[in-house]
Image (cartoon, rainbow, N blue to C red; front, side):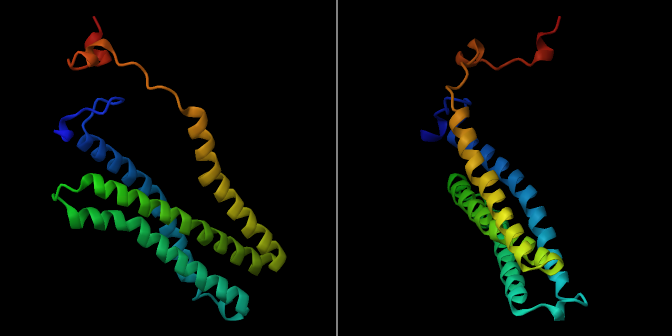
Length: 183
């Protein structure tokens, strides 16, 4: 059976790997979702501030676009939980992991312009249009570098052969913890 075949680098079955990958993805989503919720709450409150009626049409368009991008990012980041809940116990974990990973990636792509728009709006209102555009562009470039370029660079430099398996793992016996080996 394919599910019984062990994955070579971690000595895990495909289902164990899917479980681990989903747990790691959920942890990543917990981090990003908190940031999106804070951004969304901030944007929601702006419309009720005394200065909001003074915004010009560019600032209002930036606000509405950024608000909608934040909502879309929140929806993309919460979709994996809904997908998992809908397909729970239907032997779909590998598919759930694959689709959820794509949803999370799409969420990050949408979050970049949401961050950019937020910075653009706040700096535009406080320091002026030129400063806002510069700060927004800097935010976009920073996100692209940190979320796009850096992972590719780390991935290229960090690719090595997996470490050799300890003899007891290769023979199928269970690994003993360091505490078990103490005299």
